[in-house]
Amino acid sequence: MRFVAGIWRLAIVALCVMGTSEAWTQPNRWVYFTFQTGALVGFVMLWAAAASLVHGVQPPAWLKGAATTYAIVVALVAFTMLPPDNPRTVPQIMGIMTNTMLHRIVPAMVVLDFLLFDEHRRFKASYPLLWLIYPPLYLTFVLVRAWWWPHAGPGAGGSPYPYDFLNLPAVGWAQFGIACLKVLAAFLASGAVVCLVDRALPEHALTK
Image (cartoon, rainbow, N blue to C red):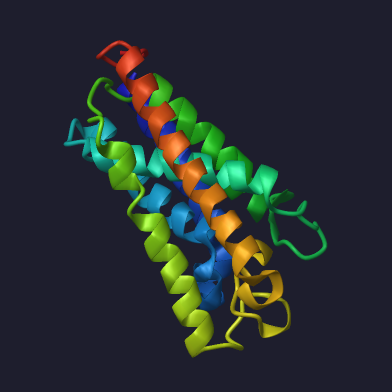
């Protein structure tokens, strides 16, 4: 089954590359958490695919768990906090919107990879808190960048804010704070669920 796992993971890598392709020519797109997560997932899955195919060392548990958790959060935020994608403005590859790849297909495949191909009972109880370190850093980065380069995009009209709910001048501190708390709660809850599922599943991969 390691070959199946390897091919599955390479398919995820391909989707991540296609999904983030817009950012390779428009660097300000990397401000989106979706694109950053796509790059992280692509890197981790490429490592995992190579390890599966050649009996190499798999990514450390904390890194694989982080990629899984962040992919889940991307899907949750897309479904609950973002407007529907407009096929007229979102790039398409093979008839599929790149946002659909990163918001839906990749997270679903990453979760299945975690359930079916990963070894389990490796996650420490502290991992959800470890995975919570990056979101505040990301939010700080967005605010500092917006202050330093107020017309750098990637938002409409050159707005430096990647998401409307993070547009501080538009929503105000109160709504910005509420949005941040929702996002942090999504990270913490997703990480906790990933850890609990990891503890509940058999130690060896289900497809081994």
